[in-house]
Image 1 (cartoon, helix red, strand yellow):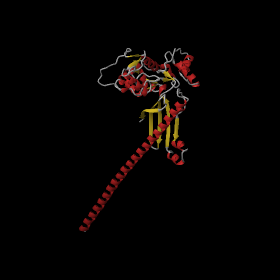
Image 2 (spheres, rainbow, N blue to C red):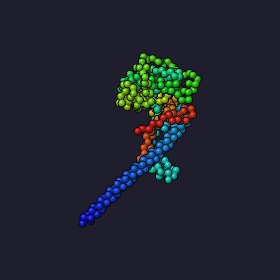
Image 3 (cartoon, rainbow, N blue to C red):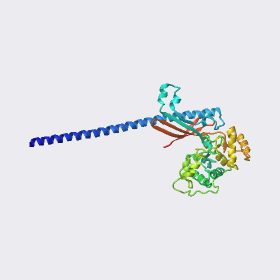
Image 4 (tube, one colour):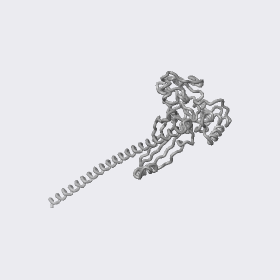
Length: 365
């Protein structure tokens, strides 16, 4: 009996050991399978994201074609009634590919596109606060500071922030290659014209520029250069601006690579009232109401409309006010199964050749 008991115990231990080995093997195998499943899922997500990026790139090329086609049709006018101004609601990609073939239409059944084109020159360009009358020399533009002050006041913000913003922008540009840009104008607003003026060793300026309009830098010998203002969110780095103030300004201001004119065919009343001296908000609203009837073909039409709105102006500087646009912001969204791409792209359209170039691409997190 003693031998049998010992044998039974050994058999029980062997069975338990076998069960433990089987359980451990099952755990290891399940872990390996789980890791393999995660890896497969990760590769699928990367594939879907890559496909979404390519779809977004294709949509951007299509949008650039629209902008070029619109410029070929109306080379000197950009207005809200153009094809570019029609937003695209959430649309299945197969609705576009259905005309090509049933197979490709099925491939785009789970992919959706949406987006819009925004006239960047419908907003006040903060880059205008600092001018470059000669390459490498940064000067404060008093006239543009006054316009920005009026805009801040219209929005219920502190107008003195305009001077602080101008100093911040000038300090940031002092460390940037863009300090060699020349003053904006009909022939000098493109990157090629700016480089040509630099090569000639000259630039153009005006009586509105000064190095010291009663403004002093807080610390010109600071060891760390101020951050360059590259977007509206960069205003949070300017002392005095709060997140609420930046959100109020977002609809009315922008930051472009070069100084630009405001497009009077697309600008909102607040921006128009700010950039036109002596114009109040009610007059700007009347101006926009007239614009909705017929868009302005040239600066002369703008002059007549301003007079009709009760604004007495002697002349309009085409450097500051215009009826066409060179910079556009494209907002696009692609939903490709599990992958989503939200992308904002700044496009420059050459006023002569109507070709378009990508200035920057920013993906929203």
